[in-house]
Image (cartoon, rainbow, N blue to C red; front, side):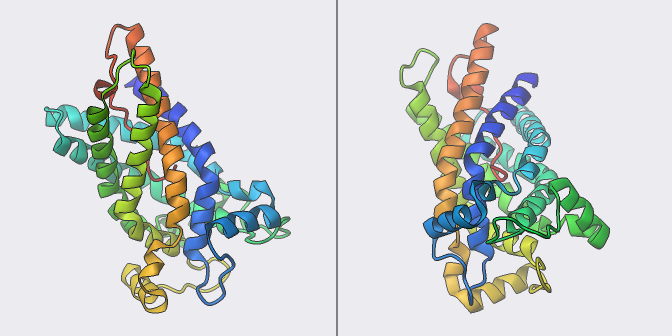
Length: 302
């Protein structure tokens, strides 16, 4: 358990650093006004943020996922590992169920963390030097939301987070398990790193594709009210308004930047965690192949 926790921290931190700029672009595209859009697409959004807000603009809100990283990985690793032991046989179905259980439980931490991240990412949109900042950092953001809206406020988007994370984590672990079995790898395999990168990257993309429309609704609900009055009365109202104003394309906004982010982030995370565990367990005379290591990794916040 201690090794899993340490490996998750290393892998998760690497994933956050690699992927956060893409996440900022994704959120900006998801929540921008359809009547007066600021960005024409993924590249234009990325270019505009750098030009108007500097490179640091891409890393707005990174404190929140970094703060929640330890807690989320501890929950995911503990729940998924214990679930697999309780289920017994290492089967694809059990991998899905164990991953889904981990996704469900970690939503408790993930939701407020992503709320702060989203609010920070939207703060000072289009401004290089924001003169009036509503939030100083992610923690200050959560404290202010709690003072204004109470416990319910810091858990805005919890239902959509659970709907996204539960099947998303299931698909994540199922895909990784299937790919590592198909590719085959061990400590002496000269191609182990490319195989791990491929398996991790594809797993992340598959997970996001499976639940992406829910993520769009979650982002819109969590960004609702920033800089003005609330537009949505709830999940169904958000879905109705998004469909009526934008059609099916509303539920794919930011998908390109998400997939561009998903592959390198999850490839980096999976490879880091798996190689760390393989090395440490080999030192103890334990598992030497990536199938038996089965790292349990963070999906939503990376």
